[in-house]
Image 1 (cartoon, rainbow, N blue to C red):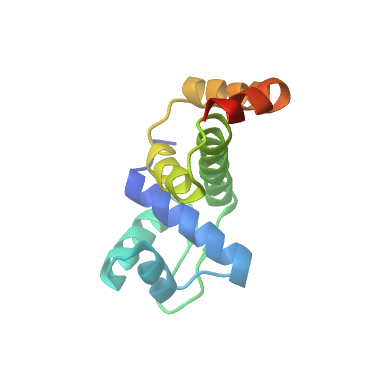
Image 2 (cartoon, rainbow, N blue to C red):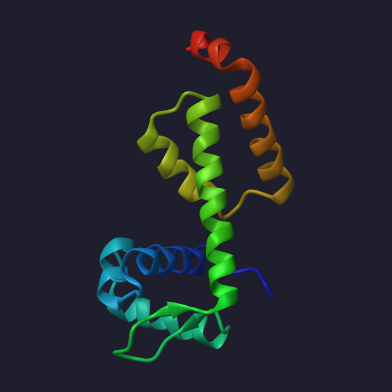
Length: 135
């Protein structure tokens, strides 16, 4: 499958979060959370539906297909691990770490992501106190 745009990845991630919370996603809730117009959400949903990543028809509950769910889980994993790197290794505040991770999760290469994850694990295992003393 071709790479999704940053915008479509944000939609997939938000749909996944809403499905986890409510069993389904709704256009209005997606629009509010992502701070976009409902028409933009509908357009994105149509695109994601054509790519067979969401189950969507107007005025119906929105869910992810199996492939859409896999993509969403990968995006969320990146988000969480990058956030952890910023907090645990760089001692960045939770809010800044989350905001920056949200931007980076879309552009970070697999190699960089793996190395960040490995380094975070190494720091947490071996250098936790030394890192705290640096800041």
